[in-house]
Each structure stands twice: as C-alpha cells, then as structure tokens.
Image (cartoon, rainbow, N blue to C red; front, side, top):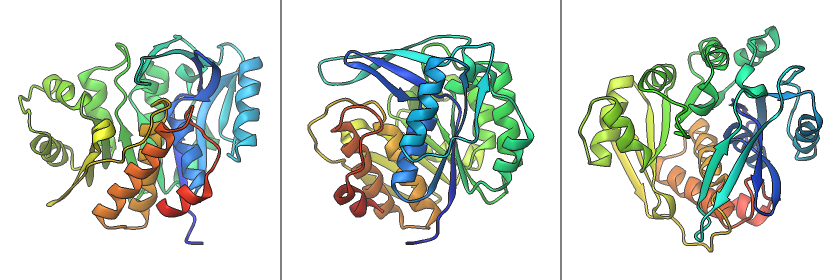
Length: 297
C-alpha cells in the first residue's frame, strides 16, 4: 500500500431525490467517497440539519467507510436536498432547495485543525452561493499548507455563481476542473472570446497561476494542461446508467494520481476510467468493484 493522503471534500452534502428514490450526494461527498475507495483518507467537511435526513446522511457516510467527525450539525436549517431529473441518455438536471444547512458552513477550530493536516482539498462554486459558506471555504483554503493541492471543481448550477466568485475561487486554487459546456461560459464571464479549449485552458493557467487545468468532455474524454505539457484522452465507452457523480469520480482519480506525481497520460487514463465506471452504475456512490479500482490505483 502506498502512502495514504488526507483528502477533503469541502462544501455541500445533500440528498439527490431521483426518480427511483433518494441517494446521498453532493460533489464533495461523492469525491470523498471515491477518494476512500482508491485508498486515501477521504473526509467530508460539510453541514447537515438536526433532522431525520441529517441523521440518515451521517449513518450512510459511516456505513460507506467515511470519516464523519467533520460534518457539522445545524439546529436551525434543514439538511440539503436536490430534485434530480434524468433525460433519456441518463444526463442529470438539478433543482436545489435553498437556505439549507450547507449554506451555513461555520469556520471552527476543528476545521482549522483539519485544514492544517490536509494534503488535498476539493471545493466547488455551488457551496459558495451563500456568503457565510463562501467565507468559511476561503478561510479553509487559506489555512492549508502551501504545498497542498487545492482543486476548484467548477459547478455552475442554476444561478448560484458570479464572475467574482469564480475569479476569487481560482485565485485560491492551484488545480481547476471544468467541463466543456462550462468553459466557454466562464471565458465569456471573464470577458475573453476564445473558442479553442486548449488556448482557453492555457490562458486560465497563466492568469491564475494554476498547476493543472482539466477540461472534461463527457463521454468524449478530457484535456489536461500542466505547464507546457498537454494530454488528451478520448474516454471509455460504457452503457450509461446515469451520469450523477461521474465527474466527481473523475476528480478523485485525478487528485489521487496528482498527489503521487503520476505522469499526465496515466493520470488522464485513470480519471476517465473511474468516471466511466461510475457513469455505468446507478447513483454517485456505487459499491466498490475491486477489479475496476485496482486498475485505476
């Protein structure tokens, strides 16, 4: 077993209300779950309500082998949930409940201590829709070690983002992951007219001092830009059950190999392989398949 790193999913923890029932999700939780399957110490840093859904969320995380000691409990706000609709191709559309527990992430001594011992932290734009959580996330990012990986996984949901939030998030990050639909929207918000994905990724890397920029392309694979190095992968063909959590799995594999200084092409293969596997399963936290995981680690 190689060295075990401490990897944090920071932000929203919520229930995905799917046509077939509810499943625990939220990008940070999905990311932490996949991180743990790959063998690192996956930690969820979020907040749930003091309600039945909150208790269920804690129980589910524990039963999945995740550390829950950094999930805060909120006595005033409900546990988050999101209505998920799937189209005929399994692509997901989301409608989020507002002013829920994860909109009130609190900066505590416990989280400060966690930040100091963190090797990598993944955060998004959705959890920054409220000022309270936005400031807490920034405090966390400012408290991690200088050499820690800080991954901004862009998540443009509904109207819960702005150019300013995205810009400040990128200034706190050293790795960016964005999909091919979000990238042109971000460039437009930043006042740039660049249609070429490679040029856009290189510009963002230079502008914000990013060590790695990843552009995911769904079933068509991904683009990685790291300094002067560029790698593209065409993706893996699978029968899609649903795409919920596939991008978070991709990020988990990416970070797993980034921490181990894996060459870019191998990193890209591993990330695409794990994302494709999750897309072939129902839900964002499928039961471990050791044959799949051993090929990715």
